[in-house]
Every structure is written in structure tokens, then in C-alpha cells.
Length: 258
Image 1 (cartoon, rainbow, N blue to C red):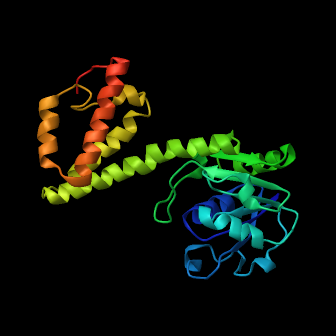
Image 2 (cartoon, helix red, strand yellow):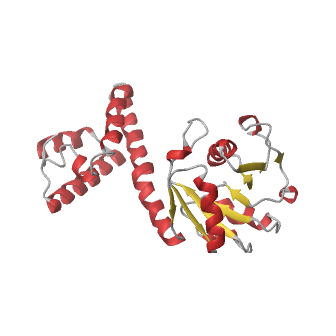
Image 3 (tube, rainbow, N blue to C red):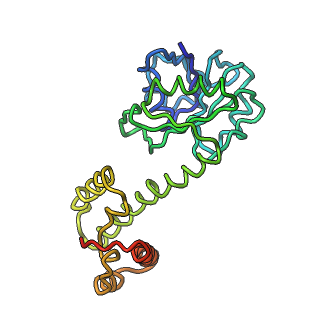
């Protein structure tokens, strides 16, 4: 039985708490948060403390906190001999400071308290300062996920860049589309099936093959019409992405029509 203490009360901590509680051979013995503001969201049967000095002895301490808080919180954790890990894709092992047994468990997924998610299907990138501790971390994560990858800090930080493109930037494009819908007095709900289908398509097609639209087919007349309707940042984004798509498909000689 792997004993775990969970530190944090945000999106990642919430999803991990659910997964850890339901996992076999894992005992979530305690969680820590600076305040009790989100207590009602978590299972009340989990022992809770607001004092890091009162952490229980565990095999693994998971810091599910904001990237900028990792070093600060890690410095406050007493030496309890367990493995101290964080959940960031962008931060290295050095953020965990003086602790001798350290590691990372990075869920490659956008997690939120509002959205239920099955972590079994979520890939985790893991790392540790020793082979022995990596084996412990791998065993723990294998209880909550079917997809575990060993990636060092340098590789994981590069993975995080790809995740920003795949998730954060694409979501911002949805936000831009919603803003334009409001400007044009069109309900955003019209686009939701298109967004869902786009996500489905790349499950079986290479994104390069799945690309459609006026930029791919070099429809300059349509592109110019679109640009006349846009202004400011949205026009800049449209122009930059259109030019990037044109250059990409000219280079790769792809030309299927929508």
C-alpha cells in the first residue's frame, strides 16, 4: 500500500484526490491546503490540515500547486523521508530544493474542478532523482493511469510547449471565435459540433492531413473577404495563421479541398 499526502486544493489536486481514493493499493492519508475554502469540494473523510508542520509520514508527497508556488511550498515541507513530487510540465526537479528524494508526475491534460475526467485515460510524464524512487512513482501512477511515460525535465518542458500549442492556443482560438460570434450576432452554439468533430478527426488522422479551409486550398479571394471583416488583434492572428498554413502546405505539397 502506497501512502500519499496531497498538497493543494485546486484543479489538479481535486482530480488527483478522486483518482487516488478510488485506486487499488493506494492510501490517500492526508491533504493539505493553506485555507479551508475549498474543503466542501473534497471528500470529508480525507484527513485535512492547514499546517505543513503537521504532515503525516507518507511514501509520496504530491505538490499539486501553481508553478510559481512549487519552490516556496517545497521549502516549507519538513524532512519526512518520503518522495516529494510536483505536477508541473514546465518546471524541473530543482524546484523541489533541498529534498533528497524528488520527482515529477505531470498529467498531460487540462484539468478543472468543474469537469469530471477519467484519469485512467490521461497520460502522465514521470521523473525522479533515482531509479528506485522512479519505480515507486511509476507504481503509484500505474494505479491511476494506463499511460505512463518516463521523461526527464528537459523532455517534459518540451512536451509542455507542445501541450500549449495543442490545448491552450486552440482554446484561445475558440474564445476568439466566440467573440466574433458576439460581434456578428451569431450564436456560438452553431460552432460547437464543428469543434467536437475537429477533435474527433485527429484521433484517426494526422493533423497535417486533417487541415481544411481557405488557407490550405489557397483561396485568396475568400481570405481577403475575411480580412476585411476583421480588425485589431483578430486580424493579426488571422493573417499570421493563414500565412503559416499556406507556407506549411506549399512546403509539404498537400492540396486536398474542403
